[in-house]
Every structure is written in structure tokens, then in C-alpha cells.
Image (cartoon, rainbow, N blue to C red; front, side):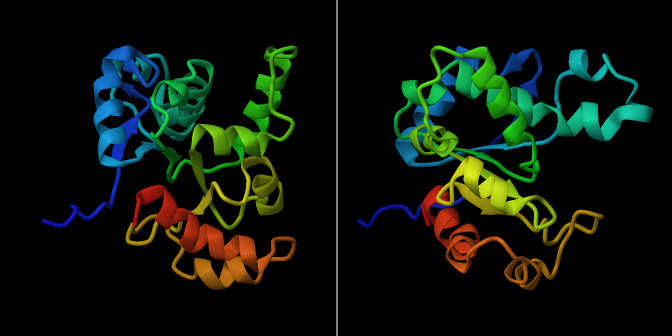
Length: 198
């Protein structure tokens, strides 16, 4: 009997009830995902009433309820060294922008001054198997440098009838200056295939 085709991923949001992504209650999921070669995909959104009730969602919904949570998840993954516990597991930040990456890397370098072992931040993403999807409007040369060209994905939000959908993202991406065509091809094809096991 042939192997089961590998595709897709296990989607987690930053908070579920009172749990967060760095807690050991999720380790059985990480172990099984690792065994099946399924990546863990981090998306925006919150299932935690405690966190939601902390903010006035009428004024702050996009930031407090959605956009800030992937930053917490990245912090949990890196600071708790989750990828070291599951050496085959991949993490991806999908439809969560990528411009927050340089900010958090700067914060980590200050926080772990004497302990920061990475000469290049791209080494962290490679060693920890963390992938990040960006949008065409973001600073792609900077993100490729921070994340590394092998761990950078592109997202179009295609199929969602909302302001984030970008139907012509490929021509837009290919028309940009400052990012080699080699990196663009990795973002739209090679890296996605590696991440999702396609």
C-alpha cells in the first residue's frame, strides 16, 4: 500500500480557552503532527474570552482580537524552544502579515544579549523550521533578509471576498524591484511545497 499523500496543515490560533501555544497541553498534537509531517499553522483570531474581554472590540478589533496574537505565538515558540522538543515539526504564520518579524527579532536580541547564538536571524527560522507568509505590499527585501529566502511564503487571501484578497498578486510580486526572481519562485512554489509536504 502506498504512502498517504501529505498536504495541508494543522491550524492553531494563539489562544484556545486558557491555553496558549507554548503550553505542554498541546504537545500531543505537536507530536502527532510531527509524526504525520503536518505543519502547525498559526493564524489570526482568538478563542479566549479572557483575552477578548480585555479590549474594547468596537474600537480595537483588528489589532487586539487578531493581528497581535501571532506575535505572542512566535514569542511562545521561540522562547519555549518548542522546535527543539519536536525536531521535525514545522511552524507557519499564515495570513498574519510578516512586518512584525524585524521588531520581534530586535526585541529578542536585546533580551538575550549574551545568549543570542544566531549571527543571522535567517538561521533561527531555518533551525526552528518557522515559515512566515507575507503580502506583496510589505518590505520584501527586508523580510527576505530577516526570515531567509527558504522560509518566506506569500499569501494572497485568494477566495476571500474581503479587503485582503489580492487576485493579481503574482504579477504584482514579479514587478517589484529589490527582490531576485529566484526568491520570488521560492516564495510562490518551492517553500510552500517544502512547508506543506507537497
